[in-house]
Image 1: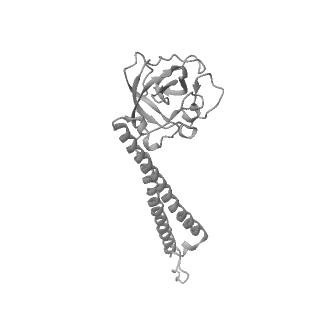
Image 2 (image 1 turned 90 degrees about the vertical axis):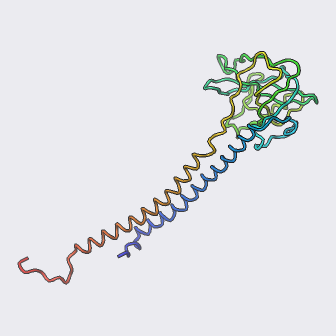
Length: 265
């Protein structure tokens, strides 16, 4: 009854199913791996955000680089702002409004500096128009903020380019920005969350980062791919069973060659 399974049409169908099963498995495994990565990153970011602030010098130093495991770690630094070398970062949207981040060097006691993202300001009539920026505090201040690694084209999806107006940048790329500064820069930058003494006026604070849902969507996709395996196998056996039943029914309806004709028929 099941010799039809060896026909060319069915052999091709078997091959297709046998290719789909491992493909679905590995696609599900890839999505599950993404879920594990994002869950781990979410847990680490949440832990860093909740940790008590520590001195910046304990986690970063001039000319170094900040690893991803320290992203959003709360840090403190003391120094004075250098308004003469302040920059604004283009193409930064906040609350669905286009604008700039305000990036001001904080010069510490040893003469090195850390870039401080003081917050967001709205864009002027055009992107090339210098935005209105509240001046930084004068005198010594102690800042508290989230430590961030230097930005790159890969980490942001923003393509850097030259030819921008003076004191404007597209990326907070500290190694590149350091080439334009009269002092050494710490490897990362600080996203301001607090300052003592408080500033009389300040840019709009950058909102707390969205640490994501821990990859829940990736987990759903992985389960979906693995369910496709069960559907493929179930469909395979269902089609085989249906074909066998159809062939059996056709065989029962077909007249036998040795059957004796009934008289008068």
